[in-house]
Image (cartoon, rainbow, N blue to C red; front, side, top):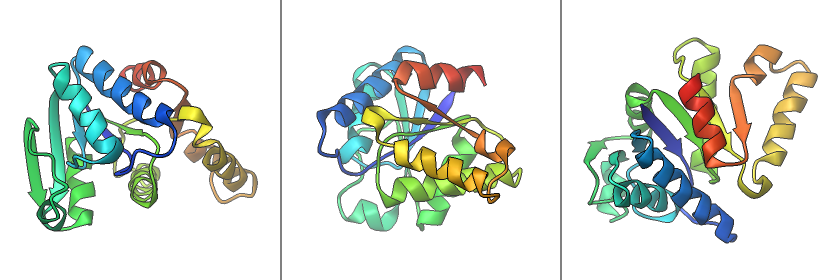
Length: 178
């Protein structure tokens, strides 16, 4: 499978986030999956990509040219696809992906995940979506999704479009079984 991971270009303040990224990358490689991600060499993005590569896996990065010019592009990938815009990046990653996985991150991670969930709601993509809730990082977001459902802004069917798991093994098992 080609599993697209959305995650931070920072590593966060808790060592658990970096460890979860490395564990996810290692497990991806050992299971024979290919990582599709934003092509960066920094933060959790770089850690997950490096772990996949260190364990013999394949990594396909997708990065806009302006970020590559800022020297944040990972040069050691199996393949690095350069696009013009952030939107083209999301579109290309979606085209390459058999599943989507969200690790901790900031605005970009939320943007990518919200767009994929919106596309899934509209029937534009059909791949499974999961988030890795390391250290309870996404507890508040999950409560917000529940509130959106409870208040009538998100159908129960749409709320079920994202699976939350506590370990890389749990979320990858979900994604590969879906």
